[in-house]
Length: 125
Image (cartoon, rainbow, N blue to C red):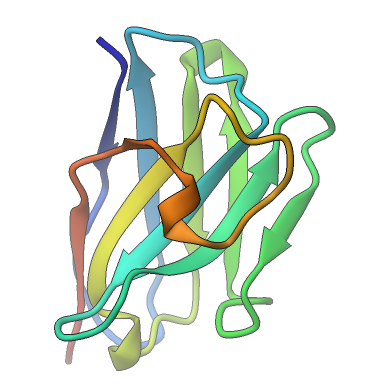
């Protein structure tokens, strides 16, 4: 069974940093693209950061560009999301996802078929 498991969420103060991890089990994390999404209460899930597996190119939503960094460590079958300069509006449930069919980088959550369970990030002083 293919699964993704996120970890690393928690409570941080504004301006702080947090690193989320997403580890695959039951398969090798080498589909075309891996992505990070978040969902705030009452809002739709939004795409934030994506890694093209073939060459490691990363793509970011404007809202996180310059503050978030996505990267992967193939030996650990894991992708990471480094989040710096946290803001209160950063608070959300964060998910990682991949898809075995995609052959392009998509920011749309409906294009992904393998999801983690999510990890809560809270930013508060």
